[in-house]
Each structure stands twice: as C-alpha cells, then as structure tokens.
Length: 218
Image 1: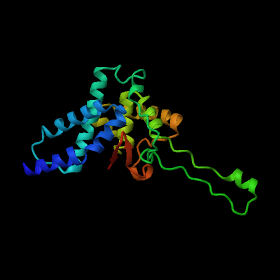
Image 2: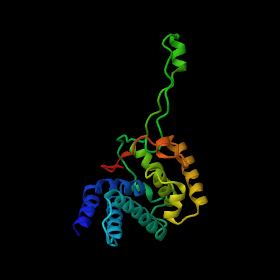
Image 3: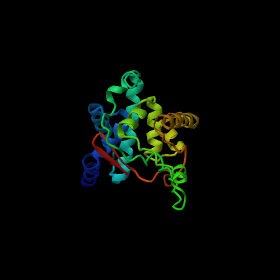
Image 4: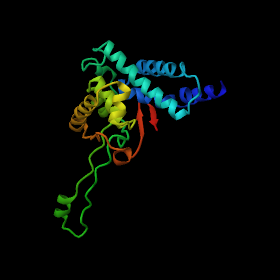
C-alpha cells in the first residue's frame, strides 16, 4: 500500500500540472474540462492497479487515459469540439511557447562579413518568428478531435505510428492519413512540420511546453 500511495502521490500531485498541460493541448483553455479529463484518467489508471508502477510508467498510462477520455467525449458529443464551439476554449495569451517539441528550429544563413552591405542583406535569412501559444493552440483546435489527439501523441509523446494505432485501436493507415492532414494544416497555419514517424532525436530538441499556466515536460 505504501508503494502504491507513493506512486499515486508522485503522479496525482507532483505531476498534476504537467498532466493538466497535456490535457490543455487537446481541449484548450477549458479549465473545467481539463480537470475532469485528468481526474477521470487518474481514477481509471490507479483504480485498477493491483501493483505499484514506476511513476514515469504510471504517468504515461494516465496521459493515454486522458487521450482516450477526450476522444470518448468527443465522439459522444460531436459538436462539443466542432469548429463552431472550439473558439470558446482557445488560448488567449500571447506568451511565446517552446515549439521545438514539434519541429527543430530552422537554420539561419550567416551573412558574409566580407560582402557589400547590399549583398549581405540579400544573403541573410532571418529566423522565422516563433508562433505564440495562442496561435498554436488555435491551430490545434482547428483540427478534428481524432486528428488532434494523434498529432499530440506523435509530436509530444513521441509515440510511433504503430504504437498510436494500437493504443487508439485504429488502422495504421488511418493514423498515417490523419498525421498527413495535420502536417499540412499546421505547416500552412503556423509554419510547423511534423515528422511522420521519426525518433525524437531527429525532430524534437526539447519536451518543455507551457500551456494554460502549466508546464508539461517529459
């Protein structure tokens, strides 16, 4: 019991802000819904545990339970996450967020110090502006719920296409199609790219993100 309680405390208390931030990626700045998703997921995971799990493994199970809970409520009420109702839950802060969880920073061409001023200006490529938390949240909320969940699991949780398909009980082809849809949308909306099925080291430099005042990190 002591080990179970230690595991529960580590996830339900110490890691609660990160879980809330993860849920916010799915539903936006809807605090009531974020709390409901996280609390239901904690009950779902720890209510059936017969032996304690390492905190990292338990947290991963809770995040997946949050995702399944989000999809279940979205399917039960298709209009809840439609484009007409989603704006009410969108983030409103312009605080910049670390977007390297989705894509590596674009390289910057260094100017030639020996070139003429006019030539320097033409050969220097400025770094693109980093989208704000509000613009990224808005772009995510424009995606259908299932597509949104898949892109969060792929880009934030670093799950493979096959793993996502298994966990969500979807065909691999469906996950691949939805990722392609999300990649096209996010590239057009905020200039972000999604690696379809690459390891974190190739596409993700950091796993720190601030959403809704919470910081989610792995």
